[in-house]
Image (cartoon, rainbow, N blue to C red; front, side, top):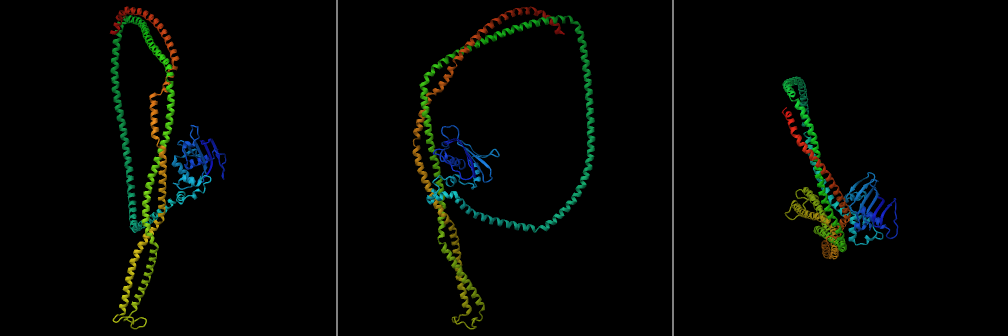
Length: 630
C-alpha cells in the first residue's frame, strides 16, 4: 500500500490542507505546533482506528463544522487508487474514484477492506499493528525490547498471531482425524459401488428388454396417433356444421324480435296520430283566449323583473348592515389589541431584571451540565472498566481450568525418559528371550533318544533319572514365563508412555497458561487502580446534580422572562399597524352607511311597483285559466 494523498479539513491546527506523497522516503518538517504529528494521527485514525483522545478534541477548535480526514492510497492488491473518508461525526466509508461510488460503509466493512489491501490476516488488530510496528513514535523504536518478557510476549504475540498459530496446530489434529474418517467413508462407497457393479450384466439385459418394449410401444403409439388424427378431422367437420346451425337459429330469433317491435311501433304511431287530431280541434276553440294569455304573461314578466330588483336591493341592504356590525366588532377588537400592545411596551421594562437573572442562571446551568457530563463520562469509564474486570475474571477462570488440567496431565511427562528407557530395555530383553526360545525349540527337535546331538552320547549335565527332553521342556517353561511377565510389563509401560507423551504436549502449553495467568492478574490490578482513580473524579457528581436541579427550579420559577419579553415586544410592535387598521375600518364603516342610505331609497321605489303588481294579478289569473284547461 502506498499513500498518495492526505486531505484535512478542520483537524487540529489545519483548517484546510492537502499533502501529496511520491514513492520513496518522505520527510515531514516544521516548527513545533505546525501539525506534523497531526498528519500521522490522521493516518492512524482513518486507516487503523487509533486515536488517543476524543474525536471532538481532534477537531479544530473554534469551528462548528465537523473535522474531516481523507487518505488516498494505491493498493498493492490491484494497483488502483481508493480514498478512505472519516469525519468526527459518524461518516466512515471507502470511495472508489474510478467507479465514483462508495464500496464499503460502516466500521466493520471499512476495517475488513483495509486488512485485505494491507495484506494482513482477517481479525488482525490494526490498532496494535500501527502502535507497535508502523507508527512507532520517534525515539521509542527499541522501547518494547526493553520491557519485561511478559510485556514483550504480550505485544509480539498479538502482532505475530502466536495464539492463532497454536490453535491452528491443535485444529490440524482434527483435520487429520477428519481425513481418516473421509478415507473410511470413501472406502465404504467404493465397496458399495463394487457391489452395484456386480449387477451390471443383469441390468444391461433388463435395459435391452426395456428398449425392445419401447420400440413396440412406439409402433402402437404411431398407429393410435394416425387414428386420432382421422377422428379429429371428423369431429372438426361436425363442429363446423353445429356452428352454422347456431348462426341460423340466432338470425331466425333476431328476425322474429324485429317483427314484433315493428308491430308495437305501428300501434303507438296510430294512437299518437289520433291524439294530435283531437288537439287540433281543441286549439281552434281557444285561440282568442290564448292571445290574451300571452299579453298578460308579458306584463307579469316586467313586474317580476322589477320585484327581483327590489329584492336584490333589500338583500344588499341586509349584507351592508351585516358588514357594518362586523366592522364595529373588528373595530372594538382592534382597539383592545392596540391597548394590549401599548401595555406590552410598559411590561417589557419591568421584565429586564428577571431577564438578567435568567441569563446568569442559564450560564450556571450550562456550566453545571458540562461538569455533570464530564462526571458521567468518568462514570461510564468506570462501568466500562468494571465490565473489563468481569471479562478478565471469566478469562482467569477459564485459564485456571486449562492450567490445572495442563499441570495434572503434564505431571505424567516427568517419567517420560525413564519410561522410554524401560520400554527399550523390555523390547531388547523380549527379543533375546524369543530368540533363545526359538533356538531351544530347534534344539528339542534335534534330540533323539536323550542323546546329545553334538556328541551323540548321554548328556553328562542331566541329574539321575532326568531325561534330556524334560530338561529342555523345563527351560521352555521358564523362558515363556519370563516372556509373559515382560509382555504384561510392556503393555503397562506402553500405556504409561502414551499418557506421558500426551502430558508432554500439555507441558509446552503449561508455561503459556502461567504467563497468561500473570497477565490477567496484572491487568486486573491495573483496572482496579484505574477505577479507584476515576471514582475520586466522579465523587462530586451528586453535589453537581443537586446544584443543577436547584438552578433548573429557579429558572422554572422565573417562567422564561426572556421569551415573554420577546412575545411582548412583538405585540408592542403591532400597535402602529393596529391603529392604521382601526382608522381604515372607521372609514369603511362610514362608506357602508352611505351605501345603505341609497339602497333604502331604491327599496322605497320598489314598494310602489309591488302595489301595481297586486292590481294586475287578478286579470292575469283569469287569462291563465283557459290555458290550464287546455
